[in-house]
Length: 133
Image (cartoon, rainbow, N blue to C red):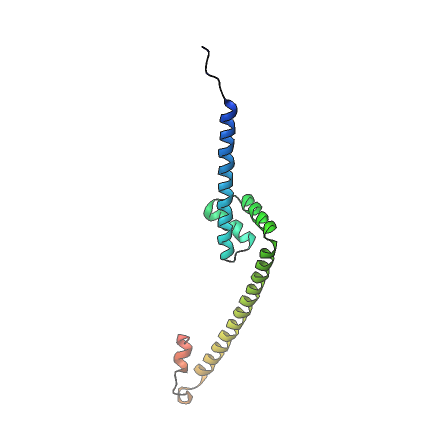
């Protein structure tokens, strides 16, 4: 009786199948993480940095999976980009309005503090200026 026959082809194909499954699982995990980034309204570049920093995903892998998702879901990503631009514009308008409001408040406070005590109104203007109420 000779040595048992080796079925190295079967062992290699089983290892190859395990490797493919592992790769598929990894790509699905990266896809899930990208979807989380989308929920946080991150850009592709922000997502690449976030996944590299927090999940240890190589930037090239994140970028590749992102591009595949964009290709498969073109209309979604077109709308996503539009919404990001609208949010960014709205945020800029809000920051500009906030800066304007702060400048007006400082101006009003300066006016109150410039008046002699005898001419100041007995209101909470001074407290408003100090506390920012």
